Image 1 (tube, one colour):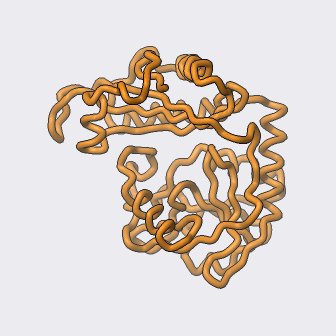
Image 2: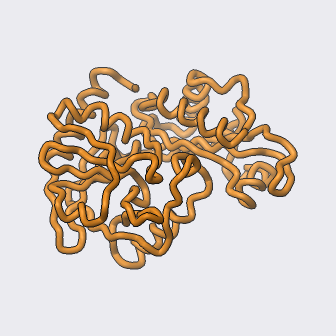
Length: 281
């Protein structure tokens, strides 16, 4: 069951016209949002990123598209699905026909909601094993900061990880700088410094990334946005992968290098405390 343009219907009923441009040209953007007890976490950050993405792609933004509208429509879907802790995907695609030049900049949208086992963020018990993915590069630029339907480097990186028994892979740009993982932003902890790749290197403008950078000082970490050379991985004490659904996952092994998880665990505990006190952000 999905919410398609405010209509609750089966996913199989999604009209082909709504999929056409996304399938042909990857002409769409999406947000993946964690629902916790019926509340959308970090909804303002997700909303403003979605609005910025749609403007960059020259999409017409419907008048009704407000944070309140998105919350209301997500709750309708949650009530229909029968659970309130889940992974919400809001997909927006350019509707209509055309080739590279669209016949219209109007949009269709739909929401999908899948259940999550836990209400709160849970740190992974065992560390991930990761490797560099160098078959294809992330091309830095304004489009690389968007969650767009053009996701082939992430798809191919995920296939590479599965075929080679890695939990995740780390993507690099054409300057051989580490950018992010195949499903989230990357952070390195070295002493009291928390370091992540800058957007200029091709990193996604991650919502959880933004909040981790703001909250790091609460656990005595100094944040740096600076290019990461793969050799820097050997010097780090901890290596994290972050996104809004999983929170922080700590990496245990990269080649012969092993990592700890003390700061990752401390950060996740603090995030859950903040969410309990403040509610959905």
